[in-house]
Amino acid sequence: MTEIHCHYCGGVIRDVAMIEYRPPRASAQFAMPHAGACQCTPPVVYEDLPGLGSSENDQPDQRED
Image (tube, rainbow, N blue to C red; front, side, top):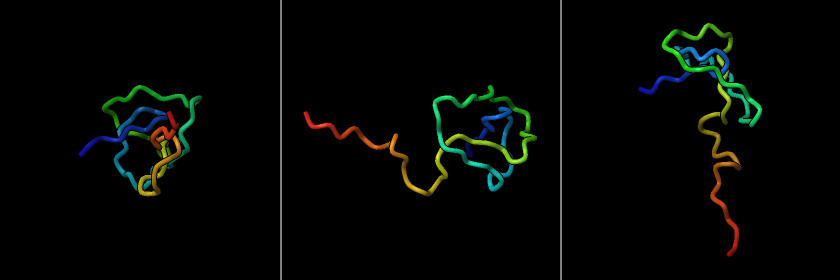
């Protein structure tokens, strides 16, 4: 299983049910991932909530040539 790291502190998130998903944004600051456990309450991940479909940024470019 892939480790999920908190974007706020960089620690490994042990309980994925506690993650606070925040919308992706260009100005978000990401901590360097490390092997220690995340101590944040709640852990923060800047991405769309899994299972709710793709964000508009994930859609293919539909320009007409």
